[in-house]
Structure formats: C-alpha cells, structure tokens
Length: 442
Figure (cartoon, rainbow, N blue to C red):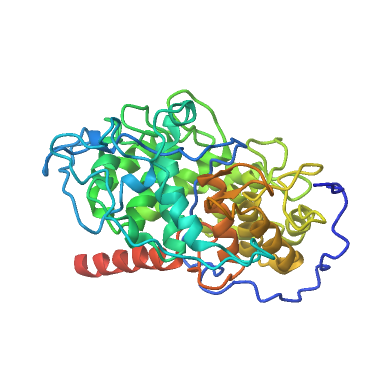
C-alpha cells in the first residue's frame, strides 16, 4: 500500500465539532464516580499466527471441586466459555484426557453459510467467517508459533472471547474448563500469569479479571487478594511495575486502575498519586508516553486517557491538543497509525478511536474511510482480520478490528465500552451487581 503517512488526510474533517454519528452513548459517557473501562494493553507489534491461545485448560480441573493453587474451589458451569474454541484442546491425537472428555470439545454444529459478494468479498464484516476462525484456533497445537506464544494465552483468550461476544456469539463457546483454567493461572502472590506455571503479571491479571467479568464469574476470585497483589506493585511516585522485575510503564498504571475498578477496589492503592504519575507522562504535543519524557504513542495514550477516565481525572487532558495529534494518525487509505511516519495498523482502530471517543473528538476523523480499511484487512476465505490488507490474520487484530467497528456503530455488533474494551452490557452488569451488593450490605 502506497501512502504518504506523514501528511494529514486531505479529506479529513476539520475539528469543527460536526458529528459523523459515531457511537458516543453509554459507551462514550463518563461515569460520575469512575469510568468503566478496559482492554488488554498489550499493544506491541507482534505477529501472531492462528494459534496464540491456550492448550493448557486440560490441566485446570480433571474433577469437579478440585482446588486451584489460588485456594479457590473450582466448579464448572455449562454457561462458561469453551476451552477448545480458544486453542485449548489437550495435546494428543484424540484431544481428550481421562476424566476430561468434554473439556476440549465443542458440540458439533451445522455448518453456517455466509453470503459473500464475489465482486466485493470484503465489503462487509464476515462475522460467520470470523467466528469460525476463532473457534478453530485449537487445530494446530504442535507448531512453533503455538509454543512461542504460550505466555500470551490469557490475553489471547480475552481477545477471542470478547470478539465473539461483540458478535453476539459467546454462547457458541461454552465449556466448564475455562474458569478452572483461569484460577489455576493464579499465583500465590494473588496475580495471574499468562498461562499455567507462568509468573504473575499485571497484563494477564487484568485479562483474567476481564474474562471473568465477561462470563459473569467475578465471584470466583478473592477480590481483596488480587487487590493486595496490585497494590504491592505501586511505586512511591505513583507508578506501577508490571511484575517483580521492576519495569515501569503507563500500560501497567492502566492495568492496575482498570482491574481494581472492575473489582471495586480502587481504594487499595494511592489513586491520587497514580493520577499524578500519569499526568507527568503527558507531552507538549498532548500525547502520553510510557514514562515521563517518553515518546507519545497511541497505545500509551489509550492507557493514560482510559486510566484518567476511570479515576475521574479527564480534566487533566488537553482534549483539543490531544485530539489533533490523534486525528493526524489517519492516513489517506483510511487506517490509523500509532506514531507519525508509521504504517497504518488495524489495532490502532482501537487505541486511537477509543481515545477519541473518551475525549469527545471522534468526529475529527473519517469514520467511513476507517471502516473501509478495517474491512479490507479481512481474510474472506479463512476468516480473521490482519494488521493490513492481505497480511496474515491473528486473534489480536481480529478482536481490535471488531472492537473498532463496534465503536463506529457497525450494524449487528454489540456496543463496546471505549475504555474497558468489554461489551457495554458486561460493564453495566458489573456495576449493577456492585450496587446491589452495596445495598445488601447497607
């Protein structure tokens, strides 16, 4: 694709305030007390093949009532999400181990047909193809790509499940192995690893909590225990390290604040100090970096803006200055990049667009051109969405492409919250259940 990525799209709307009817309803409004927000902040430009998820659910619970390392009692549910549909079939020819005959399998379904226009096969969102792609992520578990991405299993499960829910297809992926697997990824310190046996990290702790929120299983974990783990990662300057190895990054500030907000435990940290640190990472161009003085990057901007929204501190953002930097990310082809002079990438359809929604400047870009770019990144044969047209698809870009289209109010997609990166109905349920619990305690 030939495009001058340094020049502003000549057809872009000027910051005049004219709306393009982009979703800003319940998903775009800021809660008075705290912003319901989220998303996995793993925005490094990794190229995943079709197997970035977990083959380890079989280790989770061979018998109902088994106790996980976290100390929680594991109990299956027919409403839980399918392990097999997220790359979790046990290794071996049969894909089944003793006592787990159904954990890695999905009931056989009649093949669903999808009409594709031969003249314009990528002219609309191919939801049947994408659902099939996600459900088939377990077909190759012996390749190097699968092994090399073991540390991403938890986030991969979040990407795949949330994409299915946004397409209204979460119930196609029910299996009692999911929640036990998540619980078995929890470490003694209270955090969650990317897979069973992996060290805990804030990135995967957030993904674990997001999945549990998606499945309406928040009561399966001890919220205070997770909050204690997260609070222990906060530094004296208000920043957060991602794990015991000490890297500071605004991604981790977002993960901490978002996760604690979902758990109703923001009081466990020094929230004002966390806000001050994020504000210190704001640059002269209105953007945010990973640390004070770090280069502005769209992924970091999402993390900082969403975290400030949760904390009720969006007043610290210069909306016009930041909005201009963000709208400059749209290239003539319609896609968005993460920094000046970079190629467009579907994942920035989320990082940039959600930030624009949160600061009420989404009308400063061409929504129709962005829709067209995302749709052109589809694989009309196998399903899935890639970073750019005709590249290899992966579940990371599939999710963020669908989430971006949801923010653009694409037909037949559930609305997504622009900060949590969870369906709006899931976020509303979490807050509603919290309010009911507080009433019961009153």
